Structure formats: C-alpha cells, structure tokens
Image (cartoon, rainbow, N blue to C red; front, side):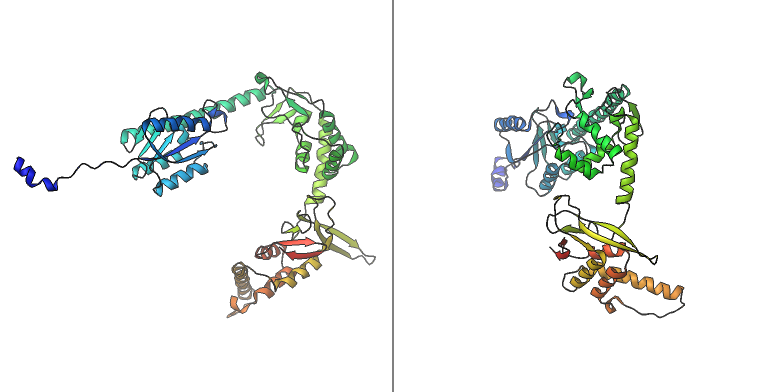
Length: 439
C-alpha cells in the first residue's frame, strides 16, 4: 500500500480552500414608525464593523440608506446592491437583521434568486443568523421576510382603524391646518385648538373673497403686505391660499381620507360659518371659470426670458360698430417669479409669424414631423378615395418640405397640431419684450 501511495504520490491533490466571502455591509433605517426600535444607521455600522473584526469577515464595500422597505424596487441603494452582486463585486451581505433587507415579497424574491444562481453566497446578521444557498436556510430567510411583511400589513390595518376611530370622535388625525395648532400633549395629538395669532387672519381671508371680491392673487398680495406667515415661519403660496379657501375644516367638518366620501363633524372650534364658506366657493368658482376655462395653443411651451416664469395667455374681444366681433389672443409673462416683470405682451398672430421666421434657422426633430406628415398624407388619401372617388393619388413623405409643413401647421393647424409641432423643436422658446428667441 505504501508503494502504491508512493507511486501515485505525485498525482495526489490537496483539498481546495473555499474562497473567502466578500461582504457588503448594508445598513438601513426607515423614517417611518416601524423603525422606532431600530438603531440609527451609524450605530448599526459601528456594531457590525466590530462584529466583522471579531469574526474576521472581509467587508469590501459599505452601503447605507434611509428608506422604507415596504414596497418592492423602491430603494435605490438596495437596487445597486442587487446589480453589483450580479456583476461579481461581492457575494455576501452583512446586515443588522433580515427585515433590513426586505419587508416585501418582491425584493425578498430577488435575493433568493441571487442565491439560486450562486451569485450570493451568504447573508449574515448582527444577531448571529446565517443564510446561504441551502434549502433550509433559504426557507427560514423567506419565513422571516414574510413575517416582517405580515407585521407591516397588520400595522397598516391597525393604524387605519385607529385613525378612523379618532375621526368618529371628531378628532383631526393630521397636522393642523394653518389657523389651528396641534396639542403639544402626546396623548392628545389629534386635538387641535385655535391659533390665537393666525385664526383672525384666516377669517379675514374668507371675508375678503366673499364680500370684497378678492381674487387669489390679490389675497396673496395682501398677505405679503401684512407679512403673514405660517407657524413654520413661511408665507402662504398662491396654491396654498386656494387650498385654504376650499378647506371644509374651518367651518367644522372634514373628510378623511381625502376623496373618500367619509365626512365627520369635528370637535374643534370653527373659525368661519358654513354660509361664509359657501359664499367663498361661489366666488372662487366663478373666477376660475372666467380665468382658466380657456384653451390656448402656446401656453406651457414658453418661458419668460427676463424672470424665468411661465408664459400665460388671455383673450380680448373687440366689437365694431358694423356688428363684427374680433377675437385677439395675447401672450405674456405670468409674473409668478417677479410681480414687476416688464416682459410685455405679444399678439398670437405676431407670435406665429415670429415662430415661422425661425423655423428655417433651427434644428427640428425631423422624425416626429415626418410621422405627422405621413399621417396627414394617409388622411388625405382616404378623403380622396372615400369622398371624392379619386384613386392612384401618389404622394410621398419625401415630396413634402418639412419646414414648409411646420409653418403651415403654425398658421392654419389646430391648437393640438401647433403644440405638437413646437414639441418637435430641439430648443426652448423664451419670450421677452415681445420678441421670441431660442435658449
């Protein structure tokens, strides 16, 4: 036997040493209620680095993020980890607990798939758990991940049940609207009281709209003049002014959740009456109908070249003595960023001619325009065949001058066609001092 071993000794091989696992240290903490008992990210990293030194684990990269793991595919850093495992940059994960990796079935499935493919060799947790490409260990990992998802789902149900119970008691389950204050007592977080410094101004806002005909912009200017701010020290924006004027909470009722159709009578003290609220709704609805229920060709496609605000449009009607009526559309800066902007206004027909003049000088998305020409030709062919009875009408896209077609649409097309043509421009359009230019 010794001779045989000596004869074949040169062929004997030593057992291979398994390659060390290269770990990614992954620390995560959500900003939501679910993570109140979880250590901060820095604390997690400190403890896991200590563990790695003691157990001589090879950490090749460290990643951290503050993001909920309830929904699949929504964590940017976790998605990076998955991709880098596929690229072979590391083949292990060191994390605080299994629920740090996933609280949803989608992300958990991605991790198990990586194990099945042999790309992810091991997951270790600070608590001493180890999961590798072993049926029992993968099964346990999936059980723990599913348990975390079950806890999440139950928390959502319990929170919704608690909020609904508070609403039925007339308590407001959200941050108090401007003009009210949330109770500082943690046991009475849903109790709101009237803000003694702001409630009177909120009431005046409603009264000015109802009885003095104030528009949202005029109200906004008045609030700036009196230097009104919210409890966080910020002024009310125009959008928030309209939200405030439409909020039912101020006369004593509220809907929760929004657009659910579930209405409750609050226990808080109303700032205004229902009659005043209804009067305000009538006034702002009339103003909105007269101001915004219009469709213009070039709005939202240009910006002011002076202050960077958007460009809005308005129409004017001129009635002549002979009974004729002419409609004129003017475009100008909406003055959102600068109330004193001096950009000026330009008539739509003049704007169109300026646009037509620069069509020859700019880059166009020819593919987009060629598709529109092709559709136009097909429509023309169908009209000739079905209505006029003509056949063998041969017109090709190559026969049509793209720039002339664009000018034709600007002058004679529908509002939709005009907007689509401008979408094919590769440059942004700015308006300043009644002149358009390309940025």
